[in-house]
Image (cartoon, rainbow, N blue to C red):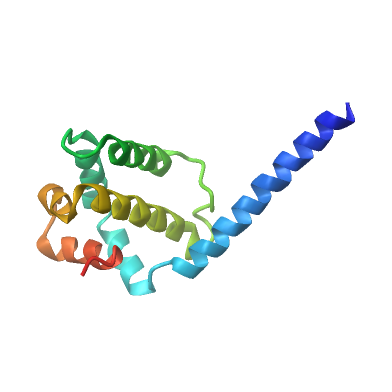
Length: 134
């Protein structure tokens, strides 16, 4: 029986450490407050963009899987960093979005982002700035 408890405690410690490391990474790589605010205003367009990218058969399968996983995470009520925590609560969603979209751009090319962008060109420029594309 002690071996089972050791495994459970080890798993809990591992999850807690992973959560702490993820929180530290989010604090270090989070976008500046202006970009964060602009990106939050674009949430409906970004949601439509991710849906379009997830259903585009010309996008590599792994990249589409990452987009689907992001969509599931975004609509899930369970968050790595709860949204009620100021700044980094919403920043984890934006950082994960930026990581997944950056991965997609590396795999499918920046033209896919522009092709599927549903909003105004200024909004696309904000997304490209958040993704550090130009």
